[in-house]
Image (cartoon, rainbow, N blue to C red; front, side, top):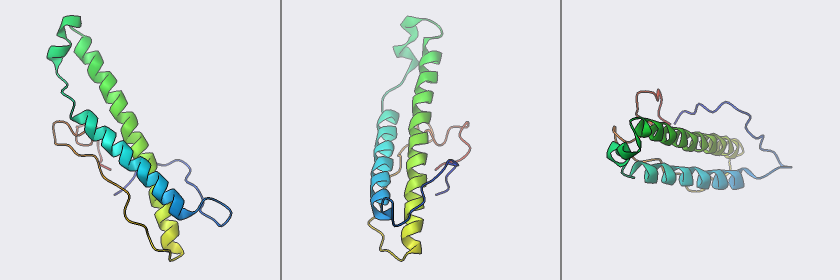
Length: 123
């Protein structure tokens, strides 16, 4: 899975947090993000719930929802990049990898935030 995360990643070394601990903790964070993304995708989101508030209400609500989903995707990507960094360190030192800690967001073409046309790449 490619990542678009380009910020500073930790250097795994003997005087810092272990690669295994980082792998497990960031993997858990990644799974929590995936669960949140999936849960929000499953919430019924329809203009009929907003039209009593005025013509622009649904447009504003949709923009707010997209902002929240973008934040969750960014947190997922951040966690993924850190998990991957820890995994690389474990492999470099021939450490046994713990079970994969991740579940990925679920969805379909209509609700999956990774498949909308404004999203060029899926994690």
